[in-house]
Amino acid sequence: MTKHITRLHLGKLLLERGLINLSQLEIALEEQKQTGQPLGRTLIELGFVKEQAVLDILGIQAGIKPINLDELEIAKNVIDKVPASVARLYEVIPIEIKGDVLTIVMVDPLNVNIIDDLRFMLGLEVKRGSASKEQIERALKKYYSTKEESFEDILKDIQNTMMDTSNTTSKNLIDLEALQELASQTPVVKLLNLILLEAIKDRATDIHFEPFEDGLKIRDRIDGVLFDVMQPPKSLSLALTSRIKVMANMDIAENRLPQDGRILMEIEGRSVDLRVSTLPTIFGEGIVIRILDKLLSGLSLDQLGLEEDSRFLIRQLISKPNGIILVTGPTGCGKTTTLYAAMREINRIEHKIITIEDPVEYDLEGVIQIGIRPKINLTFAQSLRHILRHDPDIIMVGEIRDPETAQISIQASLTGHLVLSTLHTNDAPGAITRLIDMGVEPFLINSTLQAVVAQRLIRTICANCKEEYIPPEQVFKELGFEEALKGKKIYRGKGCSICNNTGFKGQTGIFEVLVLNDEIRNLIIERVSTAALRKCASGYGMRTLRQDSIVKILNGITIPDEVIRETQVYI
Image 1 (cartoon, rainbow, N blue to C red):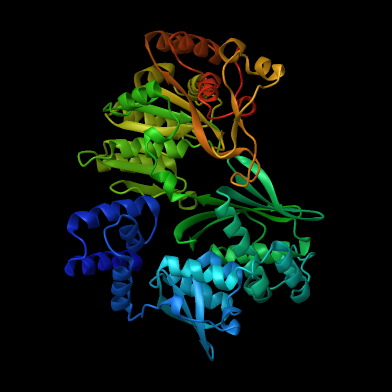
Image 2: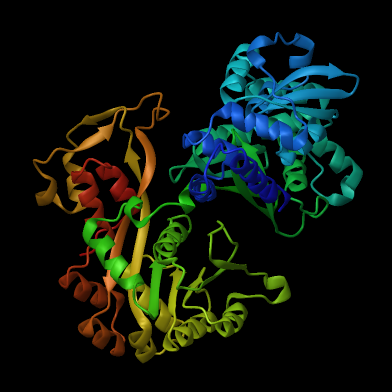
């Protein structure tokens, strides 16, 4: 809250000095919600104000003097106070050390989270100065270009300085004070910072810490595929786990039960939201850190990968005053991003939108968002009962996962609300069968369900190393669309430094949009199989996930092997 008020204060000061106008401030605040960047940086990038003017205002706000790093020559002993991985992670430059007070220069000197982290990691009091992003980047290159720390360097440091905790898998074998000491040791902090920094740079969506009998495996999920990062010795498992728990405000001594936590960080000048989940295993605690990219919450329907006809259908559906629209697919396929894009499309002053999520992943301006808390019985179903009294027009339920939530969602739809939600099924027709399995009567499905959108994420070809090629004959047979692809230009990524030699960079969505019509509704009443529903929907023009993928191949967006990996052909 304090940080938000401070940013508004910055805008007010710039307005008072005539450096920006009200319209520019409103545009910048809206852009800031999508990017997560500081307001000052947003105003600069939009071209509304000079960088030096923002630095001067920041100095006025907090008595912080702007520093010209280009005119300084910083002593080696000062630079050595901040490890290279830490300096790059937080984009800071140390310029002076007096006693136990270190003066550092940063782009956003009002970011108290960075200051607190540095105090903890360095064991020093921190005094702030400000400088432009460009100056800090030049200083990082100048003073830290030869100080690039690798995982191997940090592991050597750890082996020389840390206690062996490879057998301390029970909280009875190591006390709370020892755990806290482990979590605060500089080599552990440096290693975790480097792991986080590299994951962000590589556009990872998840970081997996997996303990096994003979070691700890760390993997990043990049564009939907897991890649090995490193395999540190088993002795590091407890230290890294403890450090992550401290950062996520978890119970550091509890290792018998799963826990969930959250870490808010500034990494390379942007806000990053990390969701942490622990799971006890036979060889220690496994941890998954999910990296939530705020840029994704700002995507529109036009940016998801929907074909033009599918976009038109979805826009028609979300403009209806009532009914249920479901988005289906496995975990991590982009369902929430699609729902957020839909809500952004219909988020207007005349609509009251309330969401129930587990957890709330992104903040949406003008939308009331509720995070469920099962421990106090604040479930999807319980929340739904109460929010109906708040007169919403549109309700987004994070997931229909039980019969009770399904029934209340249907009741909400029947009483004049548009309900958006997700379901875990393999394809769009399967959602209907799943609802019936949950005990929802077919006539209620017919009365409320408007459409089901199934989706997956597929990797896209790296534009830098894209080349034409001819796939093997077997690939065409596996795809099942030989006639559509034979003789057409097909592309792949050869592999380059831009895409880490994978041939892929980024992801796009593939979609299957099932809109209910009279014939499909008749089949639902008859409780026919998923296959029969799919056959009927295809006859009315529904493209299956694989058919939608073929369009992406022909447009040079992805490769046949990727389509085979993510979809199946229906006979």
